[in-house]
Length: 155
Ligand SMILES: CC(C)(COP(=O)(O)OP(=O)(O)OC[C@H]1O[C@@H](n2cnc3c(N)ncnc32)[C@H](O)[C@@H]1OP(=O)(O)O)[C@@H](O)C(=O)NCCC(=O)NCCS
Image (cartoon, rainbow, N blue to C red):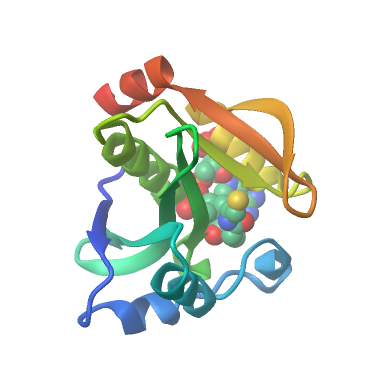
């Protein structure tokens, strides 16, 4: 798997995060990273991480903790110019590693638009299982059990 690092969003890299752009056809599935950063800053749910490869920001994601102590991954974005090189999958694996190491983690959840075939396939191949739950405006929920998360984290 390619070598990505999840790093804090900071005074040094927030502009690189905000500059991330997805392909036009993908814009309906995610918000701008600037919106996600506001959600993280002014809301009380999400925490931001930049996805770095060789010291360069190529993507972004957020994590949060649900009422049942499951961890959630949201707002996954890989810049259009950096897609299809394994960075998205590696970023999710890196996030699983971070989240499963947190005290009290009971599993990991995420959601995606049902027609987002790339995200859907990526998550399924990594071990996220669709539960039949939906979220917000019809997003499909998929969850990774604690055991699977530990196995994924162990690589
Ligand atoms: C989803 C996303 C993060 C994937 O990032 P990525 O770096 O391109 O993903 P990877 O290179 O790790 O590819 C993961 C898998 O998807 C496949 N894939 C990636 N982009 C694809 C495309 N445009 N068409 C078909 N397959 C694609 C890859 O072939 C790979 O398949 P594999 O697991 O069989 O090898 C990226 O496409 C993106 O930012 N999309 C827009 C935002 C979005 O939808 N985020 C998810 C919200 S839930």
